[in-house]
Image (cartoon, rainbow, N blue to C red; front, side, top):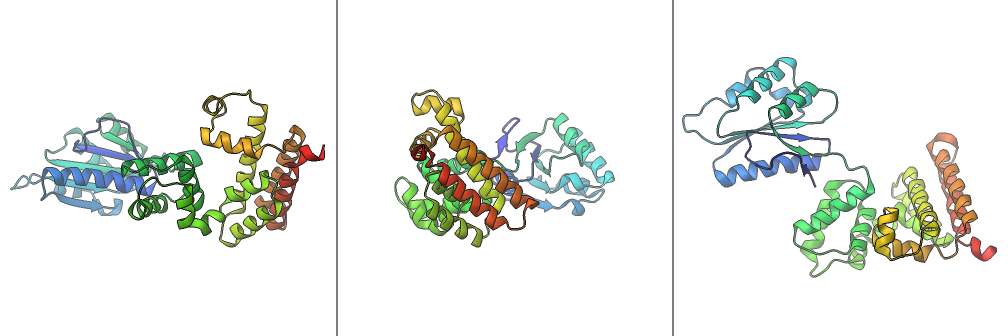
Length: 329
């Protein structure tokens, strides 16, 4: 969900949406347009790309109307505006017109920073729309999507959905909408599995879960399915590393309730319970061996080897073997 970092008046004279996540940028625009049309159903919306906003265009769009109509002017990729147009926008920021809301969509990088700074200095309402690169951020997004619909989904269901769909927020939002529309009551892991079983089974985290549980044959089957459906090898080595590190963290942590351990280790409580079940056959030496095997595979899939698939198979077998190291001792 996009984060509001300044005052939250949707009809503020200027809204600045900063980031590169297209879904969040589009939602920032939609929120402003919806608020404007709630205030005036006849609101005129002009949605422009940076190349469409030429010098003088903003003055035309924001000039007083005979009928004093409300207007929303959206400028996309504002970081790409020409120098002369930036001058126009800066001048407008100093004296915005009444009944008009200007929405600037800016990538937030160094390019066009002068305009970004000027909008902030002018007191623009700001909405953060960053790319969600971390699994935890995407998991929080899925939870928020369910909450926004007034529906309940278990933590496990949110995790499985995120694993199955991947990093595309539009697909995640669409999946949540489909589940909410089709399913009554609380949405749990079994429901998500029925809808997205093929994708869930192909996920990198399924490979990792089977490997750290010592189920080598199932892990290899999941690995081949993942690769055949286009899962990037580096995503699989990352999931393997996360799975083994979680085993190591929990095995060295002090005992306690899942909620206490979750705070100490930075894991959700439900994951503490899952890792506890997975760690039964592990030893400290097994964790070290598995991490070395995953590191070798990671180097292999990033160009250090001739056959990434073989490197992954070796790592999966090594992790599954390490998961049974206590029994070998």
